[in-house]
Length: 378
Image 1 (cartoon, helix red, strand yellow):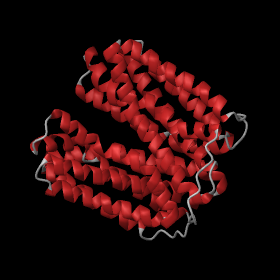
Image 2: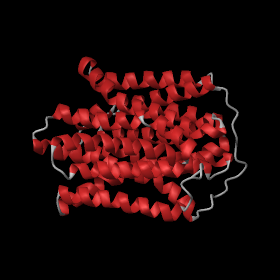
Image 3: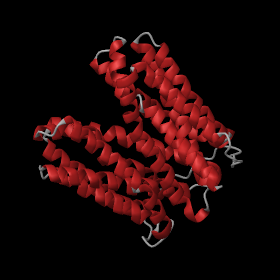
Image 4: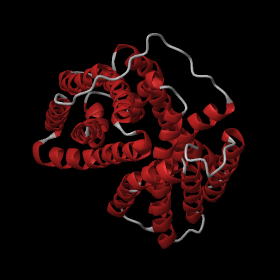
């Protein structure tokens, strides 16, 4: 079982790396195919919209037809999409190819996470989710670096071939995994009470503030303080890397002391991290970046584990689909809300407002979930 889990972790790393290595080149490639800057942005992020819209229904499909089959099928789409990138002759075709990639991610992610939970000991599921989150986040961070270097040395198209190769490696890693799994005979809707709703909101809250910092604030605000582009890139990488390395300890901690205390600690750390940017000084920016990544890394695996605790084994694909969709919505909402607040008011106001949202949401979770912090399961 340990071997199978390790293979799943490495396959998760490869899957995320193969999908993210196109990030540095997909926008300029779309402009080469006739897109303007706005359309290039839509093409770059178009996959995430499809992923968000389809993760929940595809998680249900995984419960019904078999999680392992759906995981492998998702990786096939990871191969098909780069082939379609290469064959695209205009930006419309490239946009459709991005949708295919997003569909593959929506197949792969919930099913993979559900398999990891299925193969993990009952008392170590938070730790297992921490490990898979660490490996996938590291893959997500390494992908753009690999893609950028490959494009510089061998050209844009070579990145797509490299992506295909890494996806094939992921399939080969999955092939020896021994997994029978649990299938749902029929779909049963999870009872949507306040505790379940609070648990489903957790990945969104764990991600919305940190994504506003990583995707919007660091690239657009920090250059006003004469911070060069290379240091900006380093800070973005640092945020995601720190988020990755704390996820295993966070998962283990959630197994020991309970999911909800770790979630609250993570959201509190994220709250403080966002406030650091209000102080308008470079050392505080660095400290705020570290805390934002740490807060996201603490809260996310505990949030995923909390949702998995609330559903029966045959609905784990659905649960992981909900969790992943909630996370994707946070990634979209954070930068969008930050940009709106900056346009209407200022960066300083936006930092205070975003931090307040995180703080009030944390208080709201206490009332929604309403469990003792000493309960190991929540």
